Length: 356
Image (cartoon, rainbow, N blue to C red; front, side, top):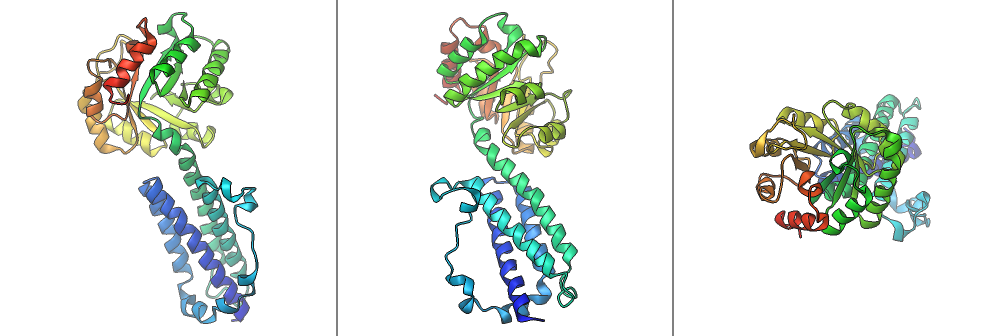
């Protein structure tokens, strides 16, 4: 087998393996995602399996000392993405190393079509590995881009239900919630028209963007897209999660309401970034709500790793109990919206959560 072709295979195998290992480590140590970690590990092991027959030959023909490329001044992979060193961040690291591995796999794939190499390397196998990596790159990037938003789901989550507000100024209420320490605001309207809701959502989105507050739209995928909301919240009767996940930009979070352990597991498996569990207690906001209690919250906490948002009948007297049961965040409606002093009521709940 020609020396030059073996050297190309060896170099690209090393590049691909190095890039895959870094992506695997991001999934493992930064995202704590066991599924993605295993998928990258499998990809790396499959690559090694496909080239194991060449192991000794590749080492024998390696000549790094006399590689003419070793003395060349090469641009940083980040420059190819239009990024300087000061602009390097985790998404750009993922992109650079995924492209590095993908290009290397394509190079090996093309060399494997040569008659002198095809007996030991199978081109179609490297094509399959490359397409698998395309999918894993998308999944990894999606998780990283949403990671900051997911981390911010640890405070008070206030739902601005327009029926409960009964004509009050939504933007002013949102402003007071933010000043009181609320971290997430959801806009919900089960009865009004989307044409009426659109300008309201746009104003609240602008307010939340200025204050680093997450803005979530309830139910309406098209409205969430129209106002560039941070995410969408759905229930069991809304569009299926896989469709929502497909249609939303990869940096948007999706929350899903559940009241059973099986629903929670299913939501996590289908791509929910957080899971709302309720109703914790009887609530006047939703009279037909199924009360599951804090014990159900504890059961779901043991079954899933996703952030949990407790909801339903929560107020200043029981919010500490819900937090102790494993909630990452607490969603409230009447506990805030029924008060004259919105800002003060928000501060009280935030303090009770131990987050002030």
